[in-house]
Length: 415
Image (cartoon, rainbow, N blue to C red; front, side, top):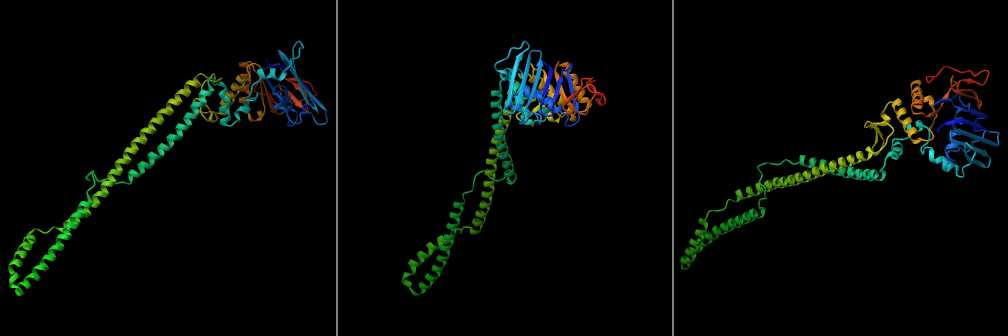
């Protein structure tokens, strides 16, 4: 279903215009402020609902405005007054439909008619627009959420892996260090015993000297003292502990225990690192499984162009962000997408065509013919073979001159 006739009176800059397009590619040309955009606005006012209406749709100085389009099946009219607007939809036989906007909503696209507007969306909004092609959107959203949570969790685990590796690099483990700690307390007790033994030895020597002196003074106690001396001498004959060696042993043990502690800490860090790496690998596997499920869901989507897909943030074309593709490739894709959004009313409206070169304009013309679509496009400058708007009026209608001096310029690539 295409537009066969468009009439507009007092819509913004227009006075009275009528266009009956006879081709798939309808070019609206004219100088700046001539009324080109107002003509396309008339179509939007008729098809886009109340949300598409501007605050001041009536030409300055007038008190009413009308717009009307005819298609193969319907006549759509909207009348504007100072009190508001009124929409009517009639059949070709003249029967009026009771709920006109509800009828229009059935065959007009939900995201508009301009592929360039789709192209200028942010990557996130483009991605959200593409969700309408997904048959199981709830399941895809759940997978996206699960993937996001798993990705964040894996990021934390990988930070732990990095921290553990850094700690391991700071520890120099001696391979000859024993696995268990040396009993420092036992060594300290041995030293204490040795120090007591030496103290007793010195005391015994002093006592021998004292007793020997007493022998001279007390002969009666000589025998007893001799016996005591013998006992003491027996004690003195025992080998004295090597205190210096014991202290050296204690010092060496303390150093070894520090090395053992590093070795045990290193072992714990190795275990923690292995656990964290296993956890990271498990999450990486889980992410791959989620991505596989997403691919399965996306494979059921009926995208209008082969090679299109989406991830959690943007639209992809052959696995690359669509916005990185060439401008002509993006134009072709977004035009195909816009066409798929308007399968019944096969009409697209393109503003800001000044951004398009001759090659892109020719591409749009070819796509309009190939897909049996009607593309209305606005260009600056009065072009031969187009609908020329001048001062709010049509002075040339698809090559038919309606003014004595159309002042038309060069031919365009679609001619």
